[in-house]
Structures are given as structure tokens and as C-alpha cells.
Image (cartoon, rainbow, N blue to C red; front, side, top):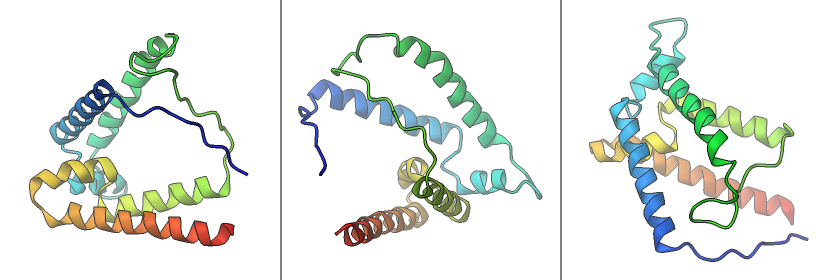
Length: 151
């Protein structure tokens, strides 16, 4: 038996903040050239012509998270929400490992992960569109397979 929590719908302010955060994230991806799959593939090519750009982008993101979350999580609640939703699970199980491996394989083969692929749609290339279509098909396939194995 599963329990579902009842949440109130997002407010206009929450949606506008989410839109602004997404636009800022997309601009950052574009500015750092992380929407170029060759940058990602170059980062993964440690035995060849290695491109460290992605390491600096990830390092900057981790540093900002470490600094800002110390202040943010001291607040009693988010500015536009009732409570913080922080992950509580700390176990490493088979679905987590398999999902991470599949994500990494797809990332290495395609040079995209979901955020940069969406941001790269603005370039007018077919590659991010094909990647997103395959990602959606894979997600729907998992949903179908998971439903059929549970009952």
C-alpha cells in the first residue's frame, strides 16, 4: 500500500522562480559551452585529448552548492514553500547503480544529459532533439516495464 501526500498546486510566484532558475541554468550551460557534446566527450576521453572544462564547471557548481546550502537550510522553510524536500535515503541499491550506469553510458555516447540537451534545442540541431526523444522513450519504457513487474 502506498500513501500519497496531498500538496497544493504551485503558485504563480513559484512557477516564475522555477522559470527564472531554469533560464539561468540554461544560460550557464550555454556560456560554459556544456551544450556542446564534444566538450563532454572530450572530458570523458581521459586517455586521449582530454578537455578539463567540464571539471571546472562541475567544481564551480559543487562549490556554490556547498556554500549556499549552509545558509539556505538554516532557514525554517523555503521562501515560497511550506518545507524543504531533502533526500532521506542513504542506501545504495541495485536500481541506483544500474540507473547511474545507464545515465553515464548515455551521457558518454550522446554527449548530452537532460539539462544541456534541452538548452541545446535553441541551436537548431537535430542531435539534441533525437537525444530527448530517445530519453523520453526510455523513460516511458521503464515506466511500462516497472508497472508490468509490480503487478
